[in-house]
Image (cartoon, rainbow, N blue to C red; front, side, top):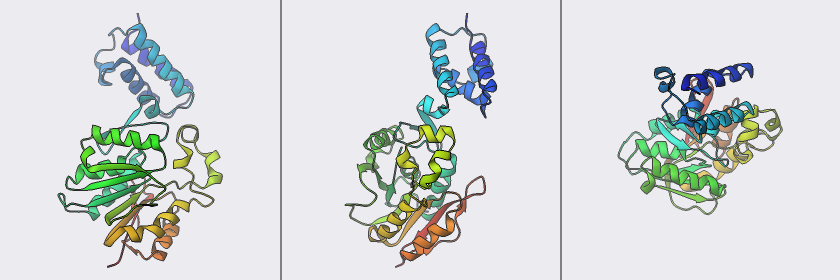
Length: 284
């Protein structure tokens, strides 16, 4: 008979042999997902029997993890900003570093119930926009992406997190065809230089969409396009907030200054001390 604890120890041993970076966490989450139990059940009820179907599902998850697939891709969802987001092949998995962007935007939009208009470029799962709408119940926003599959998933995530009535998602190439004035434009754009894609970690290289990673020759193509086009869509005093890649702060700040933005101090650092969120204001 297969037990919950035995199945966990089986995965843990395999993951340790494979030298995965977080074998205990990986094994715990995959067993819990496959058996439809909370992770704490593994500790509290290790002798509980597991059905043959659940054991087979767990082992298929383990095979995928040993093949380099990230745990959140296997689970099909990930927590971000205390909310839960569905994932798909066309989306990045929202990472803790990106919560720095949400923190920065909220600090710049301090009125909780104000009717802010937000624009999220390269929205993916919709994580940034949905987190902001969750914290600013008077706001509404548009999420733009070039991948139709990502937009379908973002709409589901908005519904799951109770903001569907204030979030609209549409297919587009950055700001092309958009009209109106926004209080905030935010973007976590593709920022990896094209030549660096092949050297990324296997979990990223093989499972994240290239469209969301490849920032062109120097990694700055999307920043150029957004910074130059953003002023026409921002109200006077409107805000532009970018997520940065490592070492990109000065280059992106220069692009923003060239487009007429007033920089709002140095970039906010993420928990690892890396400059991650860069903000500028349209004068007026």
